[in-house]
Amino acid sequence: MLISHMQQWRLDNQSIIPNGLFRGGHEVHVADIETLGIKEGTVVCDMFQADQEYFDGMPFPEERLEQASCEDFDLVWLLTSPHPNLFLETYQLLWVLNQRVAFVNDASAVLFLNSKTCLPGGVPRDHLPTTYVSNSFKELNKVVTDDPETAWIIKPGNEGCGADIYYVNAREKNFRALLQSATGNEVSRYENYGRQNIGLSRRYITMQQYAPNVVENEQRVLISGGVPVCGFRRFHNGDDHRANATLGNSFADMDLTPEEDKFCRELGESLMRQGIYFAGIDLAFPYVLELNLENPGATKWTMLATGVDKTPEVIEHLLAALVRDGRLKALPA
Image (cartoon, helix red, strand yellow):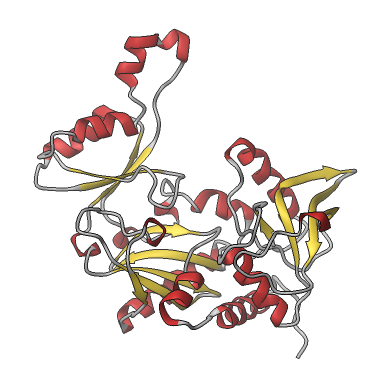
């Protein structure tokens, strides 16, 4: 299990999943992703073997971390995003490791699909809101002003937990300022500093047409081994277009209709063909708003909403699919 170094454990996939595997009798090693490297041709990392369950608030056993090979395992589970300072090199090292060891989610698939930029590569077009990906204020401004009745959500392609997500339409006075800021404030930065001094100022963003039903029916669905195992209903505060539970919004147990369940299973099968066996999707049916492939918050929020730990089912469906597809050797009976 590759996780981010921490001072103490939190109620999160980074403890919930290892605990579930440990309870199931699996040998579990927890590794600090920020220490990945190559030593004499072998991918290595600082890690320790879990010999107990770890719960919210318990100290992280830093003194037990020792550098060891990452290649002596049946399966690697990436449960965190690399630090921005180490992002590219970390994924390059993960790619090398993935040539030698099976991953729950293929490293290359996570690199590309765990992004709002690449959402059309993982979700059928007819299940996406109208979407633009651009670093041009001029282009996006034209889209917004050409249809003043339509609202849009603008997002950075590679952030999470509601960071820098804005609701815009042509009837609001600040929409241009938000679009300019999101795409890098190109005009003002060049005027103040000169492009010859600071270089390119543009930034890419994703702009999705606002789905009106998102307020009534937005859910985070955790798909494990192609099966929608658990998730939670996301509620919007009246003064915020974002529904992130991490930002303090209310949540409740997931309640999929038969049509939604069927769609999630079909999407799960499609994602597995791309190397993704564990995914959280933000669903406002019929639309998928985001894919979350590294540390999707569903087991935690399901547990908090219902008191039920769905981790055993998550692991059961995941391992069964990996064995079925030949990515993992058959488990002992």
